[in-house]
Image 1 (cartoon, rainbow, N blue to C red):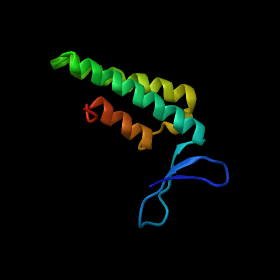
Image 2 (cartoon, rainbow, N blue to C red):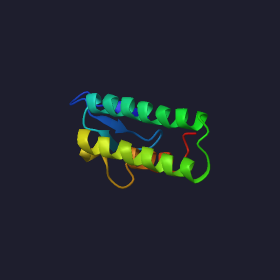
Image 3 (cartoon, helix red, strand yellow):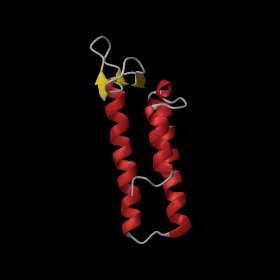
Image 4 (cartoon, helix red, strand yellow):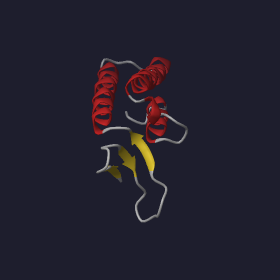
Length: 101
């Protein structure tokens, strides 16, 4: 589950049916929404390139570039949200692997 803290509007990933294990996604709802909009924009650009016939190695490289672009933007907006095993770290790995085709 993705939850918003009533205390400070930070955004957290909370495991279902478990105690503990909460993990910070973003330090504020504003940064979460901004990053989500960036992800939607950059991934949709990649999908448009796919529609134009980008295939093979170029296709793979484009997904990696998309992931790196999103990562740079996250670092600018909310660097505390990028750490090993974080929501965004896992998401960026999925993007780089092409899991958003």
